[in-house]
Length: 520
Figure 1: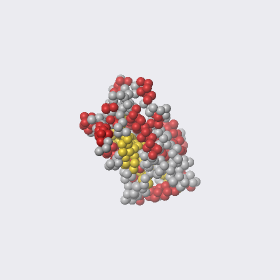
Figure 2: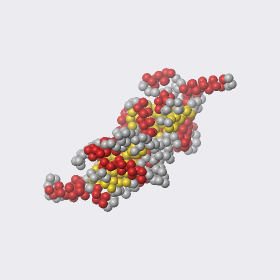
Figure 3: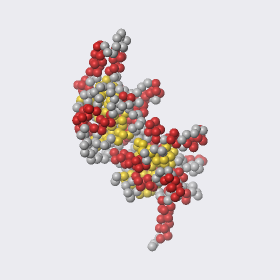
Figure 4: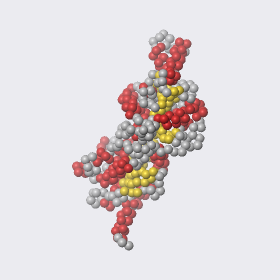
């Protein structure tokens, strides 16, 4: 056979790369209940669809060639549900998948080419930080940026052109954390950790003893920092969640999200939707039940569900078309939005604007959560950042007042004057500057009988303020488009979306929020 020797050498080198860090390191990975980098790719992608790039890479440090197969990063292209994606998988069996010059170039090139070619990027994270001593010294540090005068910026910044997903699958310090903070969607597996530096570095630098879980476990990032969008019990569930998320997303910013068949039974509960809304105006209820009645059956896909719980941000489908939903949740703080909720919504607006997802707003909000703690979290600045982001949106926006909507929160929930394509209310809506009970206290305060809230005078004033908050006043003066029967909400949205798409742009946003930072 011609070139037999050369072909044998090629196969030997490939086999060496496929062995990763060797049997002992692979066994250690399995003993911890974790897959290897290559097994993760096989589980995530469609069978036989992976084309690897850089398999024969290795460290550029003399003497380290044999110890660094693929230089600790497995990368290439494959398919998920028949659609092309780019994927990087950290190989923890090779020097804890620490980042090096060669690996950095490979990752950076793949990320840039995926954006250029229109492919989503999936980053499977489990890695230590930068590799030492490779990047020590002035030449080592400066060369880590990719070798050019703008190459590091291209790797470590992002204007959203294609969806980017990061999975936190083990110890993730340094590069996986940076990639997670650049990503549109992050899934963290329970038992993993993410942070700038690991516990050992923290202890050496600060004398602080901390565990991986305390430093960057799933509760930290799902409930406090908001850097994680969903949490998975294990790797199999993590990959399922990634596939679900990508099914809502276009491959790139110049196309609309993919349509899907409408599941049987979608909209069947609309006739009974008012049974889910309490007649008592101050009683809580679960907004998810109303949303599930309106959207296609089983399509609600919440993001950051354990952060800022008084507001829901969720992908969904209506009549097979992808939509983004921002909805107040009266089960928490009566629906009053806190600063975490504000940040969560801004992040979601950026996602929807970047990938041509129309937005639906469902109001039931008494205002923003205020007070000393809120002011110290810069609530005023966050409210105005929210308004700024809202003003830059160019996707269709439909706003529905379900129950209460008071004060500044009315406008932040895409009220009048906020570029809303359709703004309507249910007959149950209350629209005013503050809750009528608060207004009554202000108007009636100081009078001798102000403390007697059962008096006829007090009750009459309260009723007058409630009546004034009826949506018919705004509808009569064309400040809102209509008051609709709640059972018609799904059909109304379907028609309103069809009308709202800009025929000239075919539903493609201007992407004014494509480089707005979404981590906080």
